[in-house]
Amino acid sequence: MAIPKQPSSCTLLLLALATLSFTATSSAAADCSGAGAGAISVYWGQKPTATEGTLESLCSSGNYNIVLLQSLVVHDNGSTPELNLADHCGNNPCSKLQSEIEYCQKNNIKVLISIGIEEKKALRTENRYYSKSNNLKTTKAAEKLANYILENYLSGKPGPLGNVTLDGIDIADVPEGDNIKWDEFVKAVNASTSARKIYLSASPQCVYPDAFLGPAIRTGLFDYIWVEFYYQNPCIYTNGDASKLLSAWKTWTTNVPKSKIFLGLVASDELAGYIPPQDLISKVLPTAKEASNYGGVMIWERNYDLKTNYTAQIKDSVPKGCRCVCDGDDAFAYNSFYGLGSAPLRVSA
Ligand SMILES: *[C@@H]1O[C@H](CO)[C@@H](O)[C@H](O)[C@H]1NC(C)=O
Ligand SMILES: *[C@@H]1O[C@H](CO)[C@@H](O)[C@H](O)[C@H]1NC(C)=O
Ligand SMILES: *[C@@H]1O[C@H](CO)[C@@H](O)[C@H](O)[C@H]1NC(C)=O
Ligand SMILES: *[C@@H]1O[C@H](CO)[C@@H](O)[C@H](O)[C@H]1NC(C)=O
Image (cartoon, rainbow, N blue to C red; front, top):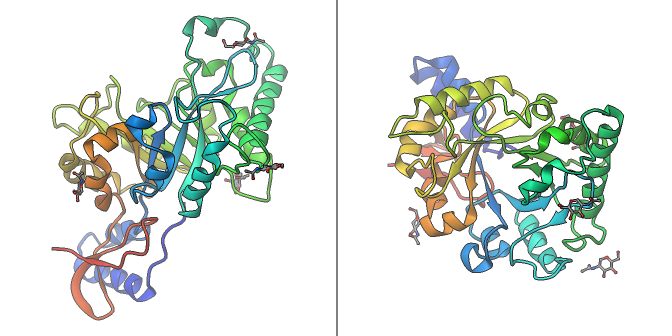
């Protein structure tokens, strides 16, 4: 994630201020070194257009920096993965999304294809192509899957989404992931080219380590990890208490230092783990931002967000906003938000 450029006078004064005014000098200065870090990603693609809107409307909302297209359904038996984007496509190929994807990318929003689950659970135990018992075959299968996705979604050549060059690959829900060597998969993606960056992300649940994605996460090759602080997990926000969440957050940020760690949040109180906007801002984000690899938040998912307006209410608090004095103005001001246009420094109340 690129860190937003700041006017150097602002940076200097910010550091000077941190040094002179605060007793916790070194930690205040260290926190501010990542000033502005904090992006927002969002899942889109599994609900009807009438419910979650179009991809272009998502990208023109000004709320997000990264969009995760869900899902590319990967089968255990090695057959060709299938793109499933609810009713957004009509018939495959879904080349009508090409221009919307390009619109997002032109507006500095990264678009990643998200690997999801095979829906028919009963079939998961059959025809295991990615057999655990044959390591060579399993590695080859992971490489084959990587090549297929790179060729069809990240090459600019005709594929299920038209001639797109997506920015990266997300690995989301993979309950059958013990059969696919996701560590070999991410290594193959990473080794496929030196000519460009291919972003890799993963969405583990908040219990560390993740049962299925653990080995892949240990490669250190994921750029972003959206830790899901929802579902019925022991580490979610419960009854106004953030202590378990923050303890899990510390475990993730400490144990996975090479990745930017994001708080995965549900945008609706219909789901377990929901954190009301004001609670997030006052009880969770201040501590979360102390991590040097704090990346921002992930929103699950666009349809709830449209209903609840969640992101709009939290987005100003997502970046590491360090207080600073700029250009002779002696009012306190916050940094502008990475990726949301070139908003000038705002004067806080
Ligand atoms: C693999 O599984 C998918 C989904 O269950 C099925 O449609 C496909 O026919 C299977 N392919 C093979 C080669 O068994
Ligand atoms: C996609 O690429 C193919 C050939 O590479 C070309 O024929 C086609 O016109 C392209 N489509 C678009 C929408 O650019
Ligand atoms: C592979 O990982 C290295 C180290 O993180 C990184 O510098 C490189 O850009 C990655 N390759 C791709 C294709 O993204
Ligand atoms: C969404 O929240 C923002 C920020 O609080 C507010 O400005 C906007 O009016 C809200 N939009 C709706 C539709 O409620």
